[in-house]
Image (tube, rainbow over the protein chains, first blue to last red):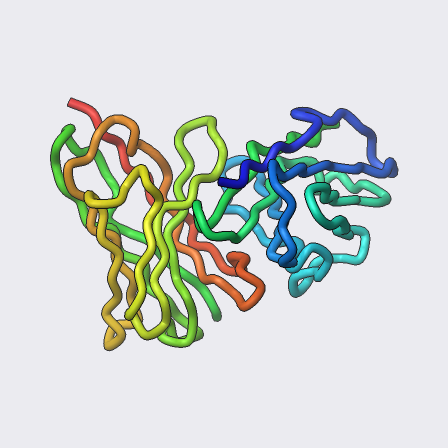
Length: 108
Length: 118
């Protein structure tokens, strides 16, 4: 069973800064089935990145994903006020089929 | 417009049953793996269940297997989640979601709240 651990739990930054969010898997996996979501209070999650590094439709290029093996990251450059939210990573595997990290809160 | 709209949530007593619905518009659900993801109050996201486009395969999280059933009505372009023998641990916002080819959920509904309490 793969467990995803996100760090830090909370990240405090200012508009214009660059945020780097980490997602570490308990086991290495060879597929590229790693995604990132953004969730704002009272809203549904929104897909940002799939396949480790592919931006979803309409996602600005300030958002980028990278990583392999057990270590993955989401980088948000030139933070804008609307970027402050909770971010989740998600993996597709065998058991469980879909695993989410516990989330990183990006706050001003 | 491409969207998902859930309904059917509410207050239910422990041990009871509830059926959630998710109507899709702007696309055909038979072309996608569809699923449910839930979020307990103040908590993170938890996978619940998915169903393949042909409805041949269904998958469940261990926490709901044997109690929940996912199915679809293709004629109505609607996804369902039948919830039986619910407990307090099932209290959450339930999101319907569409899965894309890279195994991520690219379209989400607004969610429907299920509260299990006596």
